[in-house]
Amino acid sequence: MKVRASIRDFDFRQGEVERRKQLTRDLWAGKPLDHVPVYVTVQDPKPRYSIREQFLDADKQWDEALLAAGLTWKHVPGGDMVPAIRPDVGCSALATAFGAELYWGEDPMQTCGVKAPILRSVEEACEIEVPPPDAGQLAEGTKRVRRFAEAGEGLISVSLLDMAGGLNVAMDLLGGEKLYAAMVDAPEALECLLGKIQRLFLSAIDHQIQAAGGEKHITTTDFPE
Image 1: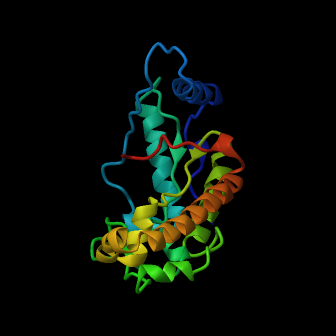
Image 2: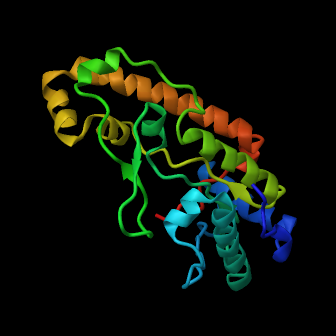
Image 3: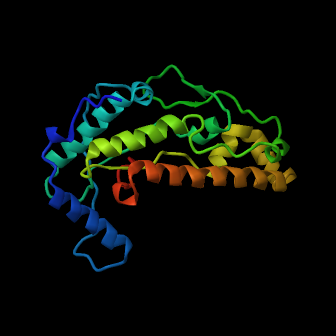
């Protein structure tokens, strides 16, 4: 990936970044604070690239995310938002690791989903192997975690990939009807599937933390919701 925009295009200051990080750390540690962190962000009202373009091109995703971080830094001086960027390849990365294919709709501002469930029944879950943490879209996502963390030079944190939750992934692999039916008719087989999803989830998190250069480079304050 050739990074076109640089953090040097903005006046990020190490001391102020660290103050904001420490405020959030103190909040979660239960320490007394003069105020609870308030995260206010500024977005470009006319983004240059669609969601689909950003998912398919790491350069475009970096440029768009860095601009948002820079605008927030500039227009909310003295705020609490920790400058951060979220590498993103969609929330079905774990499903693709198990072999699911992605589907794009007509709207380029919508994220991708799974084309079709790959398990004919929940009982098949006991036969499938747990994929490695760089299978499917996890490979590209982890690559972005590493590249964005390096480009951030310790000033811009990265989040880990949006990998949805266990039941979300199970629905991608089974489909909604079979998932709900399995809760009643085959709970043991469903538990087997969820266990394998969890094992992949945990190994993927560890793999991404290593790619980012350690936990000190990671935050979750960037998530828009």
